[in-house]
Length: 179
Ligand SMILES: Cc1cc2nc3c(=O)[nH]c(=O)nc-3n(C[C@H](O)[C@H](O)[C@H](O)COP(=O)(O)O)c2cc1C
Image (cartoon, rainbow, N blue to C red; front, top):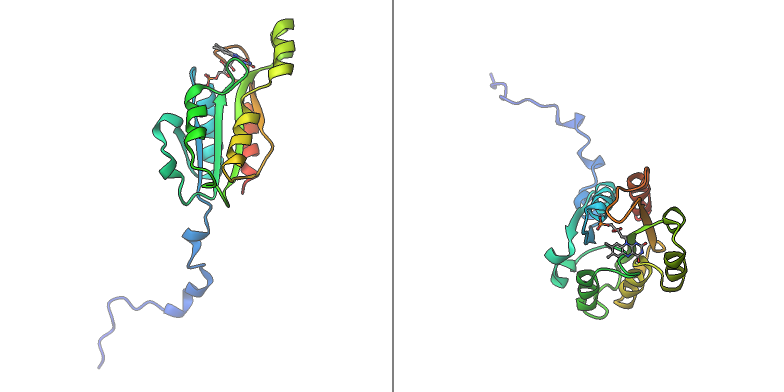
């Protein structure tokens, strides 16, 4: 008599063909790059990364070579003196021309709400000189990327924060548009 195999699984019960064999490859490869002085932009970047199931990495820890093979790249900075921080600007400048071809890109910043700060000078200057997100987005497109979402600003309640209530959720939803 034939011995019963040790593992007698009814293999037909396993719908192996129903599983997409290329599931890993079909997952979007994204990266969120940020800088942060007081930690608020870092929190926003991390909320975005969790929404996308990817990594958020500080700009000083990213080289242009590490951008190879990405499907999506989000870059963010605190707004200081109406622009992005120097390391963010240097990072963007260092991305080789055309190397973001086929990559979905978007820029964001953190900023104060001029209405809340209620400072006439800041209001006038902010209107004239803007915020970090827009030039970040423009640079990403200049390097070949395709703008996935318009630049966005997330609000801190003072120079050091904290973030305004609901901004982490708004950041996750904003980044989630990439999916
Ligand atoms: C030196 C300095 C300049 C700033 N300039 C601006 C500005 O031009 N516009 C603005 O909205 N917020 C400005 N802020 C507030 C920053 O946007 C805020 O500190 C930042 O969003 C906090 O992010 P972080 O915690 O990631 O550093 C400034 C803050 C500092 C310290």
